Image (cartoon, rainbow, N blue to C red):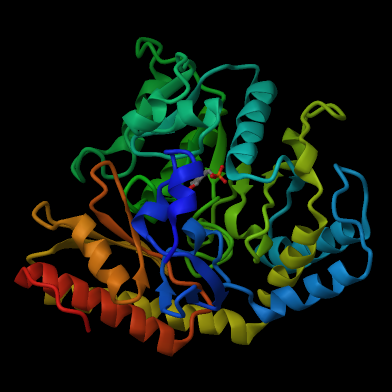
Length: 423
Ligand code: PLP
């Protein structure tokens, strides 16, 4: 496999190419193929950007027709038919059935674009400058998002000081005995705490990059209540956990809270096309016209695929299928964790957003390599990168899921036994 050109010309910063040293060419559903014709099951899915699998025909067919029809592709924030139809379907198929009402902002197309917009809006709305962000959070690679992120190596990027972020403990940090919600409530109400009232609290309901730390329903409800009580904007960064990943469209649906602002990106287009959106409580939409901008706010091909994706959520067979797969995956992972307790400390996550926290003796690099050699793409996260992320497409077939889990099981068994023949 010729990978020389990447090493010769692509920046040293490249990462996934090193983890998976092959050249990929085609993909369908949860299966991705390299130039040599070898197939892999994809549990990485573009780090959560391909929740609906590769080249999902229900999503791509309208896009192919759109492309062939001399339709608008880029439109800044002008009105287009594709955007109008996406908004109609998003409101009717996603917001209304969930009793939600938001204004929609389309910032630049990446996740961090959405978070930057959300943080700026919360600061403008409240007139306050600081935000509260959590231990082990990850919000993106631009300065405002970096400042809100927890990881030391991430925060140090950019080489400038990070101001105006108050770090607070996430649910279960540093351990389950500590009640972080009560702590936050207390410091916000205590004039002696030295902590000024922030504009916003920004959180992920599951901290994907932070190690698949999973907030409980009780904690999320408490944080929601605390935000209301102290007049602080609640921003849910649903960039990785949203758009269906947990088995419901929004990752916070199971707690029945209504965040003030929700950030979506990654799988929002359903196709891997870049698109992001900020959902804003209507009375908080204090933007002046043109105050926040970005060239790539009008990716119409992404509107077309996002519309097709949103329509799927009105199909009861589709939602029942996702629920069934989520149960199946969770059952598999319970058994896996029980089979190799010497490797796995605990299962984390919810729905189809799952993680396995490895014990310290597990050589994660080797585990990835064994999985890769046998045809499975996985990655790990967390401050020590010792949590295996398991993100199958939410549309994965039973056969692909079984195959992926078999390979993962094999890789774990080989770790446990200390040898690694191929299966
Ligand atoms: N927020 C969360 C929760 C993420 O997981 C990510 C990316 O992994 C981002 C924000 C940043 O998204 P992007 O890389 O598209 O800027």
